[in-house]
Amino acid sequence: MRVAIIMGSTSDLPKVEPAITILKDFGVEVDVRCLSAHRAHKGLSAFIEETDKNGTEVIIAAAGMAAALPGVVASQTVLPVIGVPLSGSVLDGTDALLSIVQMPPGIPVATVAINGGKNAAYLALQMIGINHKEIKEKLLAHRVEMEEAAMRTNDEVMLKY
Image (tube, rainbow, N blue to C red; front, top):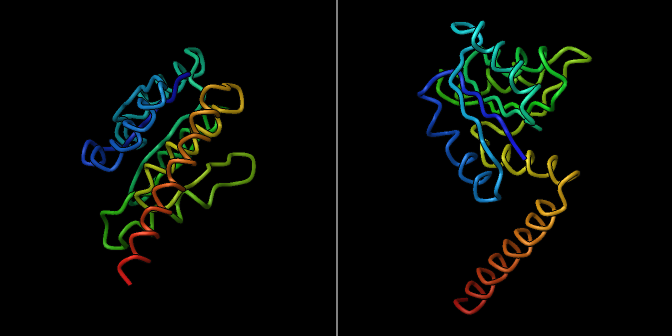
């Protein structure tokens, strides 16, 4: 089980690290790269070619501003690509969101919320869970834990008021 995470700049790392942690906590091998679609296109293409051969099942691509990275990745592979639009410009990530969502037919990029690295990781796990029963079971158990935590919070509010 392997996921690749690509970001366009090292300044994106703090927004991507939660996804890395979640995937590793679920026992998924994670390859992390900083490869700009604009400034390192040859290295990016070489890495995408590597993912097609090394057992990678999903690619998460995080980018801000013009956010070409997820689309460029998707144009070079048939592996599922999850785009994470990142804030940081004057438009606070809306520009990146629209760039990633508006892919041409035939080159889809699944897209999560602005700065949604955590949900990108969970979506990747759901995709991996289709073929890996142990991941699916861990996700189901995690959902139960989330529900139990939410109900504990509800009980605390009820007791207080």
